[in-house]
Image (cartoon, rainbow, N blue to C red):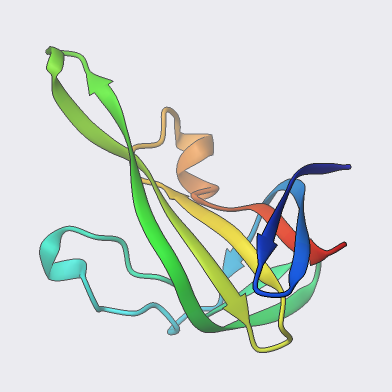
Length: 118
């Protein structure tokens, strides 16, 4: 079921919530931005047994949360990417920077949603 609809160019896009883990393909992480403390983006990843390749990064932004030291101390919890794949899919993916548990540490990359033409 679509979460929202918005205009992109000439066509309306419906955003479908997915909320599933993706698995980066080893050796495809970008180093761009890592020197600034940003996350390396996997240029290829597997979702539902199918490999997807990122053709274009459309947007990127951090999700910050309040730290344990109070409201003045914020940390980056997730790093978000809106990407277009080589097959033309527009996806929102994110990386969990500070997993709460060892289980979460194994599942750090997630596909949040896919935008589809409506």
